[in-house]
Each structure stands twice: as structure tokens, then as C-alpha cells.
Image (cartoon, rainbow, N blue to C red; front, side, top):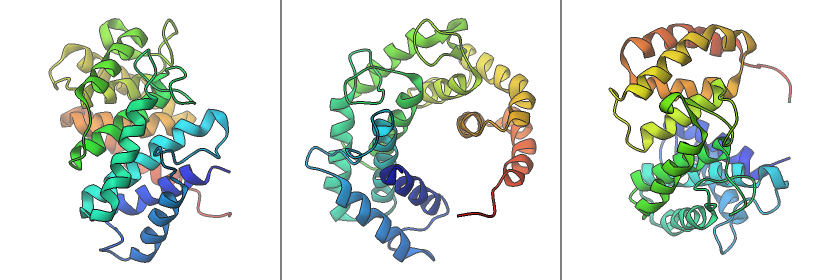
Length: 243
């Protein structure tokens, strides 16, 4: 029901395994996917205008990640302007609180904001133009959702922290420059590891997605402890039948 998001996420799976429209075993599929995303993109850079209201900016951020990652991997010139257009849209869509939520400029929550942080970092890594002030504004928003000096994060300001939002908030902080020895990051990592068995039992895929990235970036023993479980649990949760 959300073609922009579904196409973007499928593309990211191909790209994550090293396939592009120029190299790999699935060049035709990647080419069709990126051509479809570009067909959806309007002159403002918006991919998800036909999505339902609460899905629009999730889909927009995911599509932005996909096009920026593909451009970064291939440096194919016809992708650059489209990728930059998506980055420009992300900057304009940032709300006054410093994050993103549902509709452009509407409000901020940690859930949508995390996707846009990844999109903007993908764009910068690919050599696209991203303003520093956008990241500074994100930091300000995260401060409003932080608990325990930045070791925990909530969905919005003045709410209780949750494992999934803590993982997403910490990943944003890593992208925004927190070092590995920053004490709130270390405390947050410890909290994620303590909470892991509960969330593995619940199969909270959203939590898995962000906690895995945080711990992979962090590395060392915490990553090893997490990955020893995740590399078993994640494949066992795969759905192998159906549409």
C-alpha cells in the first residue's frame, strides 16, 4: 500500500548485498526499482505524495536513503541531481523542533527523525551538499527526548524512553558525532544489552534494526555479545512463504 517505501526498502536490500544497476547479479531489478522511484519524485524532490498521511515522511526518508546510497556506490551522473533534490527536500521539511514527523514541517518525533538522519548522512557520504545546521537542529531535538543524560530516548518530548527509541536516538547521536567513550553512549549501550533478551522474545524488529546498527558501530565486546544472539534469532524469524 506504500509503493515508495516498499520499493526503497527492497532496493536497500539489493544494495546492502552489493548489487547496483551497474554491477552484481540483479542489475535489471535495481535499475527498474530506481527508475520507478525517480518516476514518483516530483519537482520538489518528494517521492511519497500519494502515501497515507502518517506514512509520507517515513517513505520519503527511505527513498532518499536508497537513491543516495545508489549514487554513492556508482557515482552515476544521472542520479546526482535527483539525489540532491531529495536532500534539499529533507532540509526544507525539517520542523521547527529540529526533527521530522509524518508531514513536511509538521512536527518532530524520534521515529521519523532517525530515518532522515540516515538519509542526510548517506547524502553527505555520497558527496552531496548537506548543511551543518540541519544536524545541529537534530541534536537540539534529541535533547528534548533524552533521559538519563542522553542514555535513553522517547518518541517525543516529555515521554518515557523505550528500547526502540533509545536505540534509534543513540544511532543518531553516533552519526552526529558522539565518540565511543562518551559516557551516555556507553550507558545506553549497556541498557540495550540488558534489555535484549526481553525484546528478542517479543521479536521487536524495529528495535532489532536500530540496536544492531548502534552496536555494530560501537564494536568490541558489546557488539559480539549482541551479534552472537542476533545472527541466530534474525534468520530464524524470517518469513519464507506467502505473497
